[in-house]
Image 1 (tube, one colour):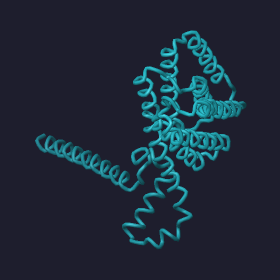
Image 2 (tube, rainbow, N blue to C red):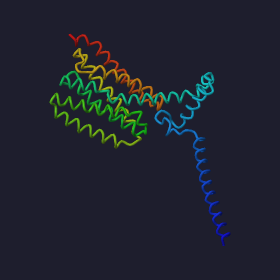
Image 3 (cartoon, rainbow, N blue to C red):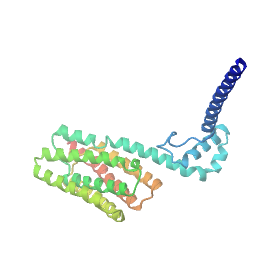
Image 4 (spheres, rainbow, N blue to C red):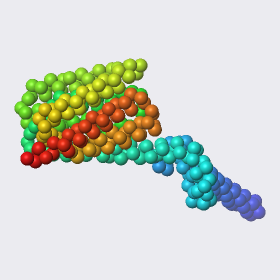
Length: 284
């Protein structure tokens, strides 16, 4: 009986040790599998690299810094360049979105300081709101990444604030109510537009973009001054247009968007020139 009890205890002890050993082996196998698997983009720089480009980036770093083979990197430039451009484009997009948070702030501060929207074309501001409504709807419907058009949401909010300030300082409440109704209608219309007709949104955005800047340019020329127009805002828009042209060319090559950013760059360049040209007259 004692022998039987001793044997049973021994068997239980063996089973317990075997079970613990199995758990340890399973844990070790899992750790080895994780260590052996490549880093996933979700855990390594997901904002800058796609699923395809992250392994390419690691391979390039290994060849350049571990194998010390810069000549080999140059020879494989055609292999590395597309992913390098994509990463630069994504980084530029993030910078654009971050900068957009402050894009119209100098202009808003100018208006608040002067307690007047003198020199600003109200029509330009209203059309600018329409530009961003249509452009955001177009990019969202085509499924573009938020980082490729996120700055437009921020600038849209700032444009609405500028419009409200202009209505308030000019005591033009009736026009403000009418514009709000038209803006709400534009949002509803853009939301209801089928994907097959998304090109209409981009066309509206392009026309409105040109139309929003031309009245301001003409007003500046007629008055021979730029009033409360902020040089910092115009310069940031100019830089943003150039950067967004590059990111669009790399990421989607959307011809309509490229045309829109190109036209906006040219018109903002004209505004920047007017601010510089009319500055002496403004000081006098």
